[in-house]
Image 1 (cartoon, rainbow, N blue to C red):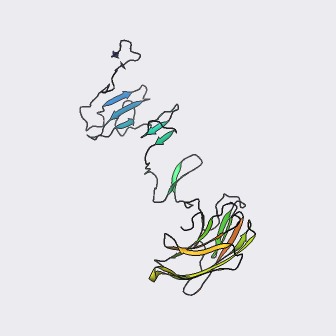
Image 2 (cartoon, one colour):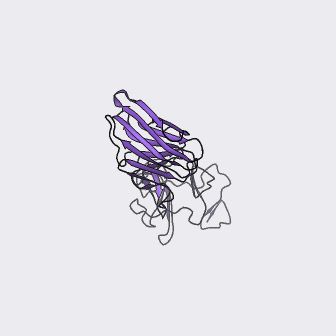
Image 3 (cartoon, rainbow, N blue to C red):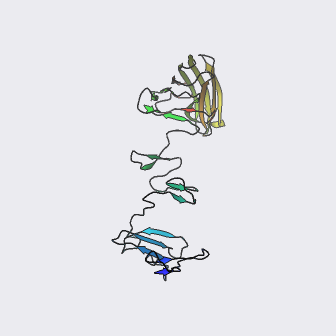
Length: 291
């Protein structure tokens, strides 16, 4: 059957020289029912059911795949887009990837949460996971027997036990080394004595640094601080209050790089403080001077 053409190429061929108006306009008589669709195209052998409609007087469009003889919402099927190739665009007319979305994407399935990231397994299935690294090309090491470069022990690891943390990296950056203490200036009244000892291989320097201070909740301040470098003088040393109100200790070498840099952290009980134990501290390698 041809409409607007004397030579139809299909069972129904509609030809219109103008795009000012719709070529096909189908209106359901009862817009409050799921089975009253504006346009329904059904294939044979239950292989296709293409529906374009609105829902309950809503102006949203619905495209739903279903059984050939069951178009209700409880009889759903799988919708496949471009199974033989081509890209899909949402909000764009020129997608350059299999799926390109011009705008924000919201995924509500699984267990989303603030700060979580999508992590893929070996099959490509993504799940929400808590992040294991910080921003600004940072590396976060915490807990016991954590590795930041895979399972190879020569690739880099951090081991925390009995208040002692050991850090090693084979990266060639010159990031700052931040030691995040569990103390917050809005929560804790704690004095501390923290010591880092180790070897900066690229610069052939000894690491021997001590930080002391008082996390003072009553004044929301970091008080009575002192930083001592008993090793090579090339290290920049400081301590500060981070954006999360935690106390951070920081050092960085001024020559060479962090390649094969190794150091160990020890904690001593002083004043009204306590000895830090396994998992209490975090060691963060970051290009940012302050976190």
